[in-house]
Length: 155
Image 1 (spheres, rainbow, N blue to C red):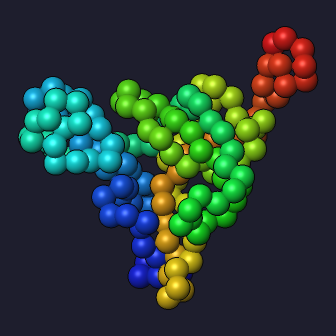
Image 2: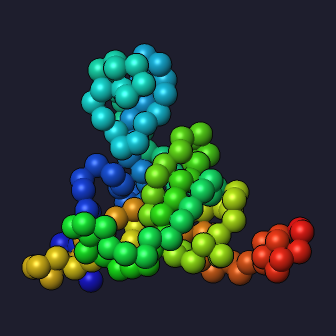
Image 3: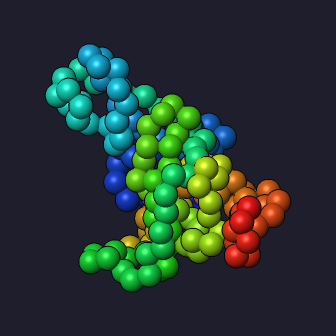
């Protein structure tokens, strides 16, 4: 697929750098030094207007998750889909789509990685893409075992 056949669901959420690696586009406040996502021109924590763009890699850990079984209003992507909160190594927590929709396959603290995911095809036949986080197991590394308690026994 040619690059022109795809486009982001919204500009300013992620960038793809050389080699195809996706990065999140965040903002760092020059006054309070806190990160925020998505980047805004005003810091959501202290209201300062001096914000610098910062690109973050997508290594994260899973905090919480659920599965969305019905389409939200206006949503054109597949269901079910996973939805959750991940914490990036930089310390910022992101509300995000997850590539894994089965909650039984996810565990607290699980390593996650930023990916660019096809969301839907628009009326002109272009693929709309979004950022999402995938369990590292989705990236070709099989899980070692079931999570503790998955079989009803204490872990």
